[in-house]
Length: 338
Image 1: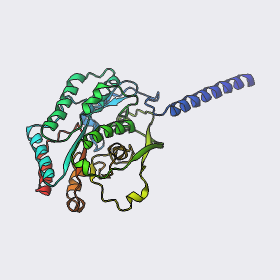
Image 2: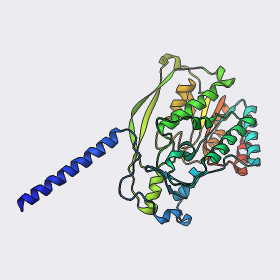
Image 3: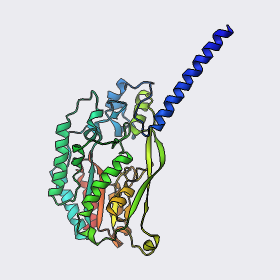
Image 4: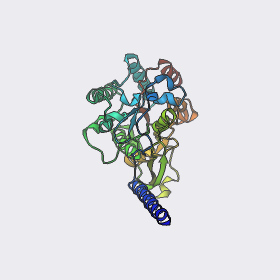
């Protein structure tokens, strides 16, 4: 009997040590996207739109299981991008009113997760080519209207060494933030207004990581009781590489950023820092978490800060799954500028 207990204990100890080793290797690998084994198949409740009844769940309607632990929602699987005719007219008017105040609008309609990482869709039926073509047309239409917009569809033309979006969260990763910042900085540097802004050198370096219990994973937990591993956010810090005495009398930043929790929120993806690094100009970050597409923009345009010292360039980071067709929201912005 003692021999049996001893043998069983030895087996359990070895199993536990093996599990600990596997977990350690997962953490050491950097960012982890693998689900734990306690139920990775979504339940039938995920297909019932009526059960997405809370304010939180309404943001994640249509959860679907992708490849390698990825989760998607209806907003990730859009086929048509851009505004309707009136929406485009409103965007053009907003751009004109800002230019009348000496401000150039730079729009950053961030692509959706599925058109950037279609290899993670698994068995989900999604017309990737059609969606990408629609997104490209959206970007080209904005540019034809005279609104400065980076050609973010160039991201379709190359593979990415690190995922630009999380597997189970609707935000971009730090790698995604860096990539978008590079493209935005190229567009900023092409502006004549940019030439008049004082340049500084910035450098970014990693300062650890933080856990991200992803938003889609939380929705799956509420609906189905499904558990997934946390993902790791690689944290970066951007600092000036210019001698500090040059900053003593530095003016207010002439580039302002309004956007969503991609730019400022509970999780730090360092998008404003990367934007400083690649544009070589200081950036005033006025993004607003939970404010939707218009929250931060409306708040800034209504502020004394904007009226007393408007920026030369205004970067508007807005996820492309928003159609921007809300005429009342635009009218409110117009009333602040006219």
